[in-house]
Length: 160
Image (tube, rainbow, N blue to C red):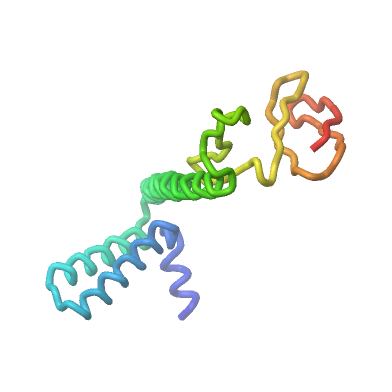
């Protein structure tokens, strides 16, 4: 039985992040429908589930992967914006104000990448290779380390 299912799924797209999101949305709408007994919510829930299963069993892998990539980029921009917002709030609470230019201590600048939501100033330090100008990311707090450029194999020593 398991082998028959694997043979059936061969060449099909399967489950991805967008598919899981659609299934969870359909499940939440079905639970809401159990409380309010609204036919519109029930229809929307069934349509979302049907679309999720259509995507899973689809043989057009290229199109489904493009849909998933668009979903992931939209999700990253939303979650990155939220993380950036909370980072600015934490920075404001720790400094007392976002812009300390009146005190002479400079202005706030975030190094958070709003697309992916990663804040590099916490974990990594970025250096440029003196030879080819390639940006190289190294972990912070390691002291003096030897950095080897991946592009031109130039070696240089910097303090992290």
